[in-house]
Amino acid sequence: MTTLTPFLWFYDQLQEAVEFYTGVFPDARVDDMQEAAGGGWFYAIFTLAGQRFYGLNGGPGHPQTDAFSIFVSCDDQAEVDCYWDALTAQGTPVACGWLTDKFGVTWQIVPKRLMELQADPDREKAARVNAAMMKMVKLDVAELERAAAG
Image (cartoon, rainbow, N blue to C red; front, side, top):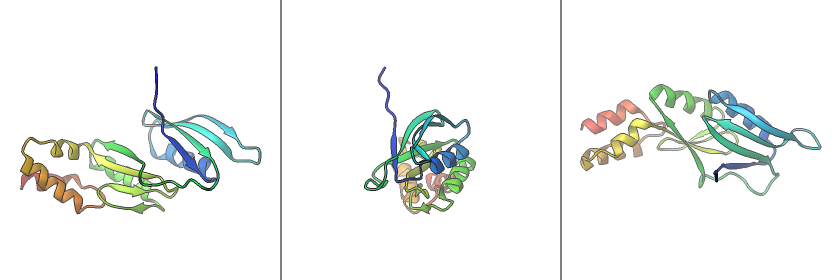
């Protein structure tokens, strides 16, 4: 069976990043790693929320970009707050639920309720929700619900 696995290139912070990420997400783990000849990790395979990732300390020349992001679908506002607070620690909030963490990796922290409201057959309601979302940095479920109600 074919599988797809995100591959993250780090300059030299792979071990720190993997240890950080596995501390943020419950049931996360390091599946495999290889030490580099000079110390630290050369590569790692790790799992976050059931998704396997590969990471590499590849050196300079290939910085992270927000053209690739990791989408985190959250059950409720408490989950949004938890992941947002952890991943923006020493990172940068951006807009509309997007942030860049301290390692340069871009994340989208999105409540499932946003996706439900955006898919509402009442297109005016969905448009109000989209307009409200566009004004937010961290997504706020209660505010999205108020926008949906009109």
